[in-house]
Length: 503
Image 1 (tube, rainbow, N blue to C red):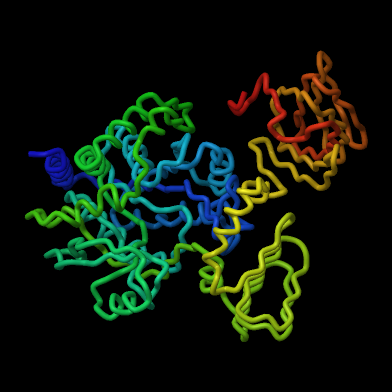
Image 2 (cartoon, one colour; image 1 turned 120 degrees about the vertical axis):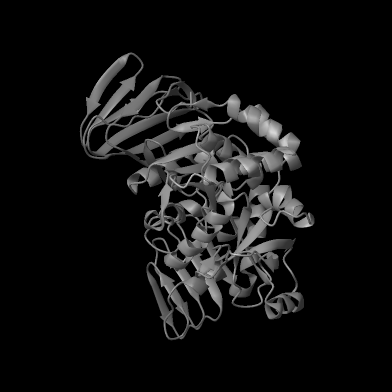
């Protein structure tokens, strides 16, 4: 009996106990960058953290997606969220502000979805319970929650019996931007089918053939599997990945809120998707085990929100098929998507365009070329432009800052510090800083001095002097910081003490 057989037998033994309710462990994969949704999505503030569809961010909407499964006889645990270490504070804050509890697994380097899921499965097993993992990317939209729950319920029952399940979206049209899943024979007694094979993004004629056959669905990247089954499958099919992830997990540091995977061990893992690492291996096998790989159809208004034309498709439109978000005016326009973060966008006679305005960048694109935005981001990176990685407004665990003006030897920032929060004790080699309090109360450390600044008061921090800014009050602290010096980059910070573990 191989490792996979052992896991399947174990899962069957567990599910045989009729007194145990099915335990669901949501796993949210939140490590993407979303470059095709630039300029809203940036490397350090990716699309899953943005409210692209409504008031909630895509991450928050994903965290809510399994609410309501309990009446179907399932116990749903707090989610495990796998995210980039750089996004941990914003991710945790968004979930906390939305009333969600979650356990964060922090990736020190990106290694694709298979290692991410392996780390999450190890984390889920640590408590001794072999839950069914419902693995969801953080950047999708599902319109029909009830239909989604029905698919999850069917998939979880299959997974409880040892299957590795993938959801296949019932296609509405011949789409060339998605991968496809081909289903095999129906599984007796289940609303599921055997997994036949995965297919890469097809050309239009082939996509039309897939649609007409009725045997193909879009690959949603949503998986359902017992934690032990996944670990056994990874050990069997990808032993190097299993060893690296196990070492990264065992050497990781858990502070009670976040599990920080060991950098060296995790970086040594092969970088592969769930599809390539395991699912295609299952599809290539033709054994007698009908639950080796299973497909459950999903007809729930799904979208992967991968580009601006996809967002235009999802959102309500006016009589001329225009979509407006923010301060937008249309005059003689049609099939236009316009998104303003501040300034007025006036679209006159536009056709089939995407216009997105942010504080530091504006995108104007033909909707049919929306997939090519990724190339622009690549060019910005090659020219060392900051617009690829950061917005002008940059979020930090203590609050945020906005670079409102800059010149050759100066920069002006608007800094907002949350109540009770404080910046690191730090020093700069190349710049001095002037602080002016415009709202709230500041507790300032400057060298050996500690003093309070009230509204309309200011202070000066010379080059090379240790300093810290804190908000001792119960309302946000807002200051204007004027930097001056020969170099004003964010990497000119030497931290001596930091509440958030960055020193």
